[in-house]
Image 1 (cartoon, rainbow, N blue to C red):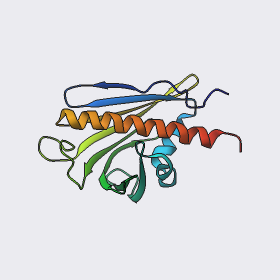
Image 2 (cartoon, helix red, strand yellow):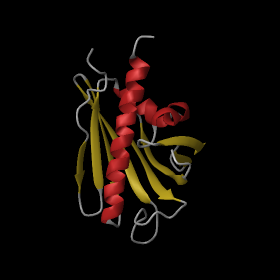
Image 3 (spheres, rainbow, N blue to C red):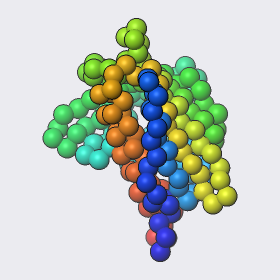
Image 4 (tube, rainbow, N blue to C red):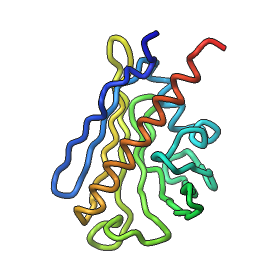
Length: 167
C-alpha cells in the first residue's frame, strides 16, 4: 500500500533570517488545512518527535490568540504563543510565534515575536504544505526550527494517513 503522505523527504531551504520546510501529502487541501486549524487535530500531531502539544488557547480569527504547551518526553515544557495575522482557507495561515521560555534567537531583532506562514498548494494528486518561519535571529534557532518544523510535518503525515485509512 502506498502511504497517503507520499513519504518523500522533507525539503528545507533557508535565507539569512528565515527557514522554509515543505512536505507533500496525498490528501485534500481541505484535510491538510483542517489539521492545522482544528484544536482536536492539532493535539494529535503538532510538534516534533518527542513532543506533544496541549492546546491552551485557540482563537482562530485574524487578531485571535493561540497558545500551546509543548511537552517533551523528559517532562520539560515550552509555552509557545502568538496571534493569527492571516487566515485564507484553505490556502494560507499566518501567525506570530514566541516562546515564554525566551528560547535564544526565537524572537526578531527587536525582541518581538517571529512570523510563521503555512501555505497549502493543491497539486494533481495531493497537497504541498510549506512552512516558512521568518525573522529568526540566530543560526541555532534556524537549525532547531528547521528540525522542529520538519518533525512536525512528519507527524502530520502520520496523522493524515491514519485519518484516511479505512477503519
